[in-house]
Image (cartoon, rainbow, N blue to C red; front, side):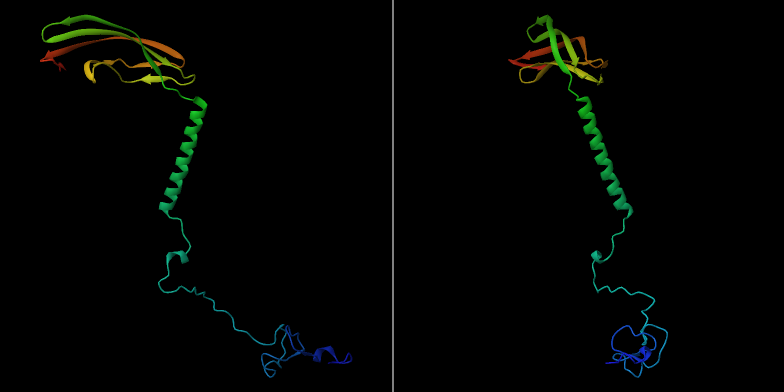
Length: 194
């Protein structure tokens, strides 16, 4: 051990860091460390290479590489976001407006000119159709309406197209129309003309 009277600059050092004017013992060898420099370490070290090399094993899979968003990924995620926004807006509209289907009922029906001959039956039907729009904030536009008279297992006696119309909210409309049809009777079987 060094006494307190020895000068501090010749003191032997066995660990790191070695200050200037101290003699380093240990690794590297004492002969190589006798030179004193102004560095904190008396021995030299090797600089790392300037270019970095990434180790990739042969046959490496794609999970070793970072995923870069491509145009396909962006289109996919933007379409999912657009679908979610549309779904939320439809849900919002449904909750705000609470749409209900229109209510249809036949208020009166009248059969006139029922004419029966040996092989045919002709008739004219007159109807009053009441259409009710129960929605408070929605209007309905009827583009195509078709009225039919059916007999038995779906045998159509008469069909007509009704004119299109517009209906305001909380409104009830009455449509009057008539149908004419001919039913041919042959050997206890019936069929419609046309």
